[in-house]
Image 1: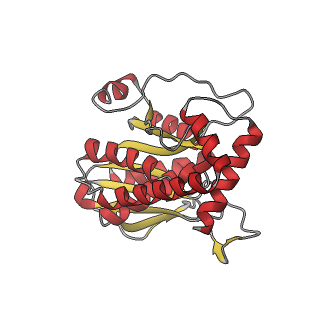
Image 2: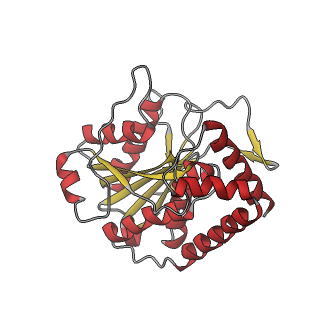
Image 3: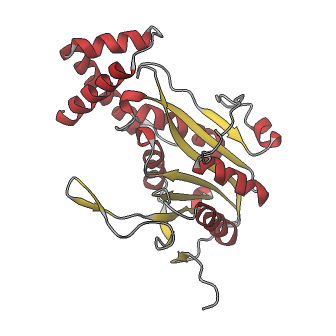
Length: 276
């Protein structure tokens, strides 16, 4: 074969036009996978394709977590009733340009994608009791203007440091712009001590935006229950561990922690939640 496409379409979705949501498995607070799983489960998403791993991942060794082998997966899902396509993947290790263009190839050829949304968590030195913010970067001024009605932080300025790669989401947004696909990258600051755990409060912030923007009619009662459960566990941690309570009180008062203190807080919370 003269040309091998790195993706496989198992069945052709029935989209005339769609929105595409992209999330990554390795994400702060499990933001990407949490939002993707919630959408696919709640909207009846069906897997319709994948990007094959050979060109993008090291297959010389497979990671094992909690006695379960973790294979790299890059799957597409369709939610036809909502004109929503979803992509969830392990971040590629190699050939970023080829991988991200493969996402857009599938989006254009099989989904008629007219708008792109990426999801990402970012580390924040803040308490879990602080309301989550939703930050947005857009591929054009026109897209930015269309987001005015939503509860978003839109005025951000930053530059990728010299010698560093852009994030996958920023790279994908740029590539989509070159294809005239409007794009938005959504970011939620996650409390540093919850980065390695689920942050349902952060996930809900993204889901509320999609619910309003895409008219999904989401019932949030189940994720509200998860938020309540986590808040109760963290309240127990503060009662049982005075040092943890002191650190969180300082964060709630907008006081900083040293690197050592932040690492200790993160470790104590992780151990407590694991035991619970």
